[in-house]
Length: 499
Ligand SMILES: *Cc1c(COP(=O)(O)O)cnc(C)c1O
Image (cartoon, rainbow, N blue to C red; front, side):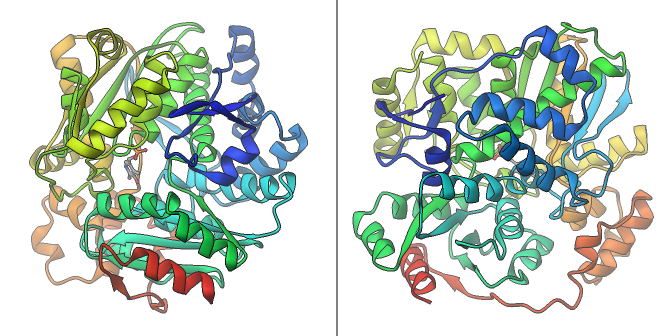
């Protein structure tokens, strides 16, 4: 299978090259030329498989220049080797009839980013061999909190790679920050930036397309790559858990084979929900994809009106991994909805860059509303949802998952649709302990507590165990406390690669 760029369909590369490069040189994103299909007969087989086997089945349809044996190695290393604290990496938890939560946070960094970033380094090191790459691949990451840590964990001490992560210094939770600045490994670097996630992401994207920066990398024996969800190697493992969730629902009798489901995803950069879209295009029977946003509701407006307008206030919320105004992966959806018309995509993306907005045609808007439903939820209702979910089901959710549960409830109230649903849970509540405790009415008890006392308190209140990886942060050495200016990213990167 060949991959083409959303901004230049003449450009064709194999999956290994697409994964190594991350972003196409003219700024477009790699997408498969056509989306492979899973038949009902395939699904019947998949129902009987475990997660790793399901992963290999889906991966081999996309990464056709990898041997099946190689993909099996990748999947076993990522999902089979005790890195996840549950029997299966992505368990589906039933809350009530027709309402399921897909827990994607049982990996080493307690957020769903592990599902992809535990496997991406294996794809990448194999891609380097395949493409005869002898330079050091430097992974540049902009993070709203969770990607950074997950990428650092995935790439630490991986031969032939270095990784540098930028996070908004005031835009992440205490635990998230602690996770990153205490990162171990010889090939890692972490820096705060004095700006928000969009500044970090734009800064990193600018380095990718900067000729002088690329020349400097080469001079130092390095090439750049990305572990952000713009990298195809991030998206394809995410398709797997939607396929897997459907199989689990069939296996448990919640849906008959071929019956439709709804999927509700808390969304920021549009990566996770895009993976659900690809799963649907492959043949997973989906009725609606429900896009849940926090107060940064640019996607809600876009799906409801067809106008994407980033000229608006940026809000810092208690679901910081969704505090995003430029959802990069939307470009892949638009490319698909526009029937692979790169000209249109180029126009929208240049409008976005120059004017901060674009509007899609009525025809594309129609396709959008047929499949997607969108809603948003501010901090007040996020907290209320955490409280009510605990009251009703005895189940504690994090702030991001709460946005999805709230929007799912809005959807049901508004439409009355009873289609069985999967609500995607993207982080462990312990990662956002302060906000979760506050939502559960524990402000008084939590007052004056340090992060580790908060973990203990939340463990008592939720009757859940504290994830080992978070416990271990206590007393860990702080290795990276620096913060750079918005326009100093390249300097920081240059220093790191010259080391
Ligand atoms: C990254 C992240 C999201 C948003 O996912 P996208 O793929 O960017 O839409 C939601 N919740 C959590 C906890 C995250 O880490």
